[in-house]
Length: 132
Image (cartoon, rainbow, N blue to C red):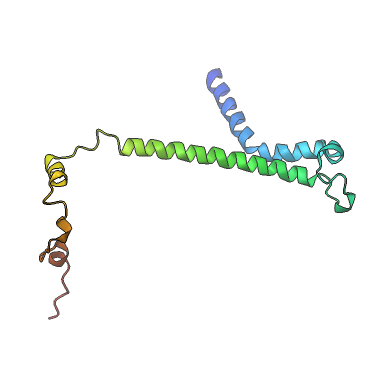
């Protein structure tokens, strides 16, 4: 394998692992800085009877990571949905015929649903089975 392919593979592996390792890095940061967090950043540091020991700070950090992931995922889904709509409903894909515009613009056919139709497609297609 050439050096450029190997370098690209390593870069993509690192990029992927950074996304995967966000939560373990938050836990690692909490464990490494636990004393500082308990003394300075914990919301319950003045209430030792709660025995929080910085877990409130850890919960906030994990919640922030989860929100970031959720918002990025929502943005990604919104972008893909917009792209799908643009590709599906592109203006060149829809060509309206003259008959469609004439029916819509015609005033006498505006309330066509009020006319009675005795023959419909449904009655011609759906009949009970013949017995015998």
